[in-house]
Amino acid sequence: MRIEKIEGIVVNEKDYGETSKLIHILTKDHGLISVMAKGAKKLKSPLRIVSSKLIYCNFYMYYKENKISTLIEADIIDDYQMIRTDLLKIGYASFICELVGQVVKQTNDYESIFDLLISSLTKINEDFDPMVITNILELKLLPYLGVNPILDECAVCGDVSSIITVCPDKFGFLCKKCRTNEYIVDSKTIKILRMLYYVDIGKISKLEIGDKVKNEINFFIDEFYDRHTGLFLKSKKFLKTIETM
Image 1 (cartoon, helix red, strand yellow):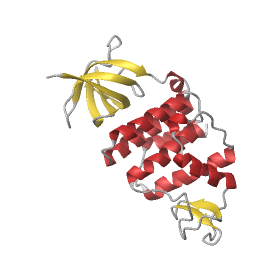
Image 2 (cartoon, one colour; image 1 turned 30 degrees about the vertical axis):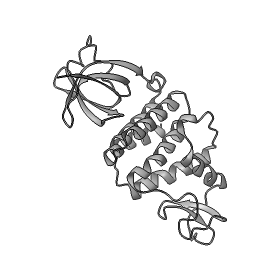
Image 3 (cartoon, rainbow, N blue to C red; image 1 turned 60 degrees about the vertical axis):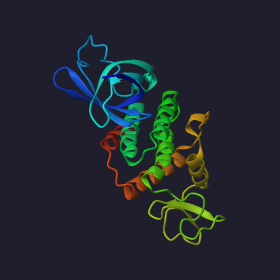
Image 4 (cartoon, rainbow, N blue to C red; image 1 turned 90 degrees about the vertical axis):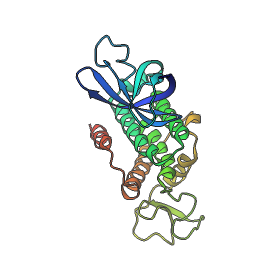
């Protein structure tokens, strides 16, 4: 059996027996794959570090399509050390890893999903606001789930001149005419939400968003996911707990 070199990032790890791990790696070419890291729980194992969650590597393995592959060794590309020192960043990183792991099952565009995840983790590691970066990623993943929000015009009538708020139940922006009793968000929320939807995560060099606007955007995205995606992520509960500490 031939050893293959596969670029990827560990998005989940589970103990397997007394000494090994079963890890899930998001890859550019094969999507989400399951890999056995034999003996990885041993203190002196060369696979101990490279089989940990949030490790981005070139992995060398006996690759088996649609089966469990076997890890041989790996060269670390990034270990996101700054994320690992901050509980809140760990919470957001864990959440987006689980989210991407669910979304990638809905598409064959593995490379785009992979690049979005790496760009997001890189920005969080560079100390950009983890909530905002996560929100941007969440917005960019929605098309892969087939539930695009309408953020260019009123979601009800198509008007573009008098947008006053955004509503998850009605799929996006609302104008004065179509708004009934929906909460009116800050005017900056409308502008910045649309900007975040289109921005290239990898090209972000500055993020300055007030708490009110940031929280309104986060609330809309949370509610939109709850109502329209059908995804239930265990890490979301953990993240919410950290945010209130």
